[in-house]
Length: 260
Image (tube, rainbow, N blue to C red; front, side):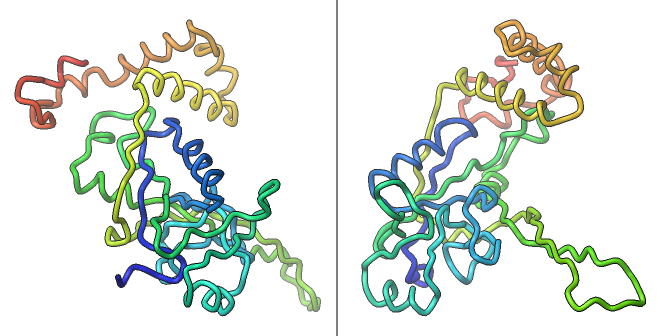
C-alpha cells in the first residue's frame, strides 16, 4: 500500500526483447483504454513543462515515467485524483479522444521494459545474466534532464540578459523492485527478432561515419543479412566455445553449447 499513490497503483511490466512489439502492444492498450502507459525509458516519453521526464511516482525520480504526463498542477491533481477514483487528462492530445487519461488509481500501470541480455555485438560475458543482474536490468532505464548552456563569453562588459539555451542529456536510472507487482512477457519468434535486429543495426549505422563501408558489406538484402549473421557467429566463436554452458542451463539433458 505504501507504493500506491494518487496517480495509480503498482507497475505491471510489459517486458520483451527489443523489437518484439512492446511499443505496438502499448499503443493498442492506450487506444483500447484511452489511458496512457509508462516506460522505463524516459527519453522516449513526452517531457514535462520543465523538460524533464515525468516519473509515475513523485518520490521516485528514478522511474518509471509517464509516456503522456499529466498537464495539471500537483494541487489540482491531488484534488481531482487523490480523493477520488476518477482519472485526469494527460497533456497530450490524441485525435478525436482529446487526451489520454491517467489510469485509475485502482489499476495497474502498464510499463515498458527490455531487461538485459540485448547487446548487439558483444561476447558472452556481456549477455550472460544471473537472475539478480537480469532483475536489475528490468528495473533500469533512463530519463531526460535539461542542461542550461550559458553561451555568454567572458567579458568585462556585463550584459543584463545572457543567452541561455536549454539542452538535454540522458541520465541512467534504476528504481526499487517493490514498485512492480505483475509482468506481461511478450514473446516473438527468435528468427523474426534476428531480422529486426539487423534492420535496427542498419538504422544505427546510417547515423554514423562508417555508413558507406558498413552498407557495402551488409546491404539491406538477403545476402547482406546472411553475411551479417555469419560475421556475428564468427566474431566471438572462441569466447563462446570456452564458456561452460552447462552451468547456465536449467535442463540437465540439454547442453547450450550445442547451439553454437
